[in-house]
Length: 345
Image (cartoon, rainbow, N blue to C red; front, side):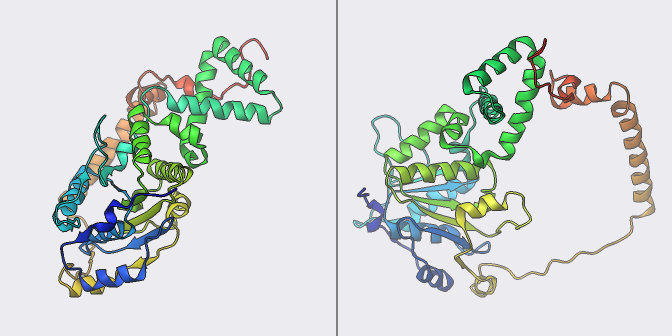
């Protein structure tokens, strides 16, 4: 598939710092490449991302965790990038409407592509997993579906509990869902935005603050990359972060599966020497509480223990707690789930 490269004629209208030029010389945003870049605060990650997107040339998408950072990207792109005729580039912070041309550079938040359907997407995914479990136990798909329908009709409480327990499993293992299941979880608006990006020929994805990509957002970015690849785009991913997540994080595997090892890093001393990061030394000073503070802590602790005994350890404590955090969900939801409809099965 031949991709347009509208960004290939763009150039930076601002001098690069030495360490920025060094990093750009060490990496190549080739078609299909994945770049995982680490740079401290103040290093100019936005400029690095813009330069790499322009070097690849294809239509680009920048994803950010907040609208404030999104505005920063659009402002700096309009300010520091120039087309071949010296004009400002086509940069947008939304998907174009009907009849509008797509921008060559689009900046969105991760949330814009990851909004979950407000109906019952998790229940749909949970039922699908339940059906798979029943088929694995020896039932045919038809018998498994009939069994679940009977359970829903004869014992709706057990059916609802079963869906909730499996929905929790689906959330915890969301990266195991296939593309159809991921699409079913997303709100119609999110699906439309993803489709529009693919139809526009987007092929470079810049992931700002990519350390956030450890849960639902990571799954959607995986999904987008697969969709782009299926369309023949050979997508290029550029991950930018100052704080790579800990390998002890339970979502570390999902993060690394998306971005791989770190390809290049801007050293902190280089940014300090350039005057864009103030040197500091974090210090901790431990001190005993004053008598007044000790008295307060003692009183507050006693009050907390009293409230726990009064509200949570009482016979109706579980119902009280569920009423606060999950109105309408009774304590029976915590009971074991029966595997058979009422009346046998």
